[in-house]
Image (cartoon, rainbow, N blue to C red):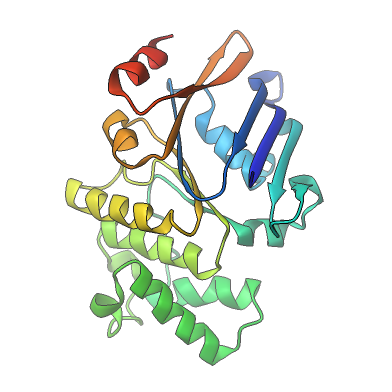
Length: 244
């Protein structure tokens, strides 16, 4: 296992979002989590890189992560900069820095790695090639990233995450704000990336989940009781699970 949750719970003040969740995730592939709006899917995702705590959430239980393929570590004991480098996140709406395309990629590398200037430039080229943007952007690196289309921005942010060589990617509905063409490109990229990374994706899109997920679960939360229901890649079974 690369990731394990034991009796995981989150509350914000007096509001309990979910409790007593248990889950194991194997390395590589796309694990997709579905569930009703408001059940806590995005909160669950943000627990894994401790972003939830920065938003005022209180975490109960344990999240264990295997960073070196030898042993599981409690994420609370992993320095935050190391955790965030190894657990990247892509959000629903692309939000690049109001900086050049090049700066969007070089800034995290200069802050979180020991790479020199030449190595950073090589990594920028490599990551843009990985998401299929190098040929389009190699002569536009000094342009503001906000001038890119929504689909290009999301691919740029995916390149930024990948440049740090994370073990896990957290994806919070990464295509829901994109047009169909851009969605298809991102889906193809995620399928390819899943051969070398572990992807954990939250989605409302049943058809997308059935297209690209390697494993599926439905998050169910009722009256403070929470659980993950593992579901086969079958539309009828998935729709039934979402109604429970």
